[in-house]
Length: 319
Image 1 (cartoon, rainbow, N blue to C red):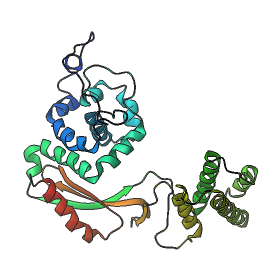
Image 2 (image 1 turned 90 degrees about the horizontal axis):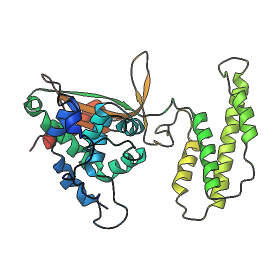
Image 3 (image 1 turned 60 degrees about the horizontal axis):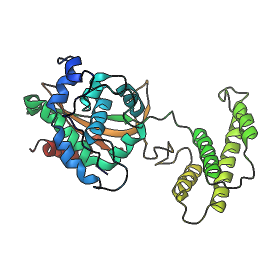
Image 4 (image 1 turned 45 degrees about the horizontal axis):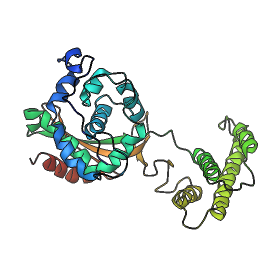
């Protein structure tokens, strides 16, 4: 459901941001340059008219996404800092100071899924328009790099332990019977896995790795027996089984349970051989440095990313 409109004519007892904040601050200037109505008109069709709880204002959610990238913050950080920063709140359309967080960090995830790729491109298109003539440079440079995901360095043993924790959480949530919790066993195996590169500990750590993998497979099979057919946890179980079946040198391996699309991309540099994430191609003007295109890929060859990226640039600058 769409959010209720804010009555801007109603005056409060306290000073407004227009009176308190500096008009020379970059966020103050940027807030008055952006055409927020474009996002209101485009995204209101994604909400129902009169069903369910009213959603957060569209300008608030769009501004949080912008602030996240302007200040290079995580979803949790931008929500936390919003309640402490008056310029963030003015940028989001507030008239006076608000002491509580604007929303939960997970609501940004839901909003990104709601607007999809076209919505993100619309926000990107507005940022290009704001730069005016600086974005109309006929000469551009195209570069491809790796957009790293927020995951630790992946190892098979880490994934096996995460599978064990996930299975235990599912069993507890569904109140399913569990023959053994393996709490004390896993603690002892964790001790055996320490200092694996020492010659005296290598055999013991390899044996402990196999035992942890065996426990993970045992818990997955036990969940399959206890869960009802067609359970919504079946996709998670299929992912767990795929991780348990993969070997060290397999192609298309899964490196993260919460980000299964992560790719292992060869960096080709001595200090960092591999990066884990997705490939992204960025287009920026040579003279002014304005980013006029950015498109994500899986792990394509760099030359194959050029065509789709230039098509996106033409699409964003067509009108």
